[in-house]
Every structure is written in structure tokens, then in C-alpha cells.
Image (cartoon, rainbow, N blue to C red; front, side):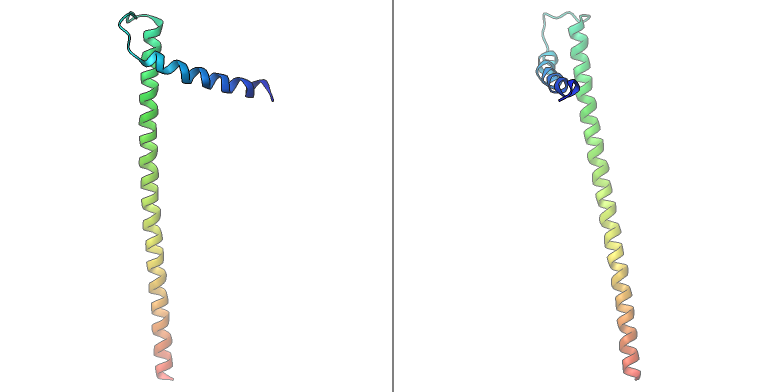
Amino acid sequence: MTRRRLRLPEAIALIATALPALASPTETTPADSPFAAMRSSAHEFGSSVKRGSVEIGHRVQQGTRQAGQQLHSGIHQMGNGIHRWWNGVRTGLAHA
């Protein structure tokens, strides 16, 4: 393993353990302290992730809906084509 691979799990574990502690409000921390700034950043990061995931969810939902409509339209057109062809075959056989 490379050093980069060894460091990534450690960083993820540090973030996972530190963010909840920094995000919880404490009355003993002054508003201008580095911990308050980190806590504010953690809240902003969480809000940003939430907004991003909601936006991605809406885009996926919209894309899925459009794909379903296009599939429905394509199947409908294909069915109409087969129906016209079959009517032509029946008419040709009736005249023969």
C-alpha cells in the first residue's frame, strides 16, 4: 500500500469523530474562538452537502421522468407503425 492509501482512512476517521463534537453547541466556547469557527464551518458544510444531495435527487428524478416519457413515446410510435403495417397487409390480402 502507498502512503496515500494509509492516510485516507485515518483522515476519514478523524473527520467522522471530530465533526459531531465540533457541531454540538457549547456555552463555554466564545463566539470568536477557532472552535466556534470550525463549528460554523461544519454546519455550513453539512448544509451544503444536504442542499447538494437534494439537488442531485431532483435532477435524477427529472431525468428518470424524461427517460420514461421518451420510452413511452417511442413505444407508442412503434405500435402505431406496426398497426399501419398490419392494416396495409390486411388490405393487400383482402384485395388479392
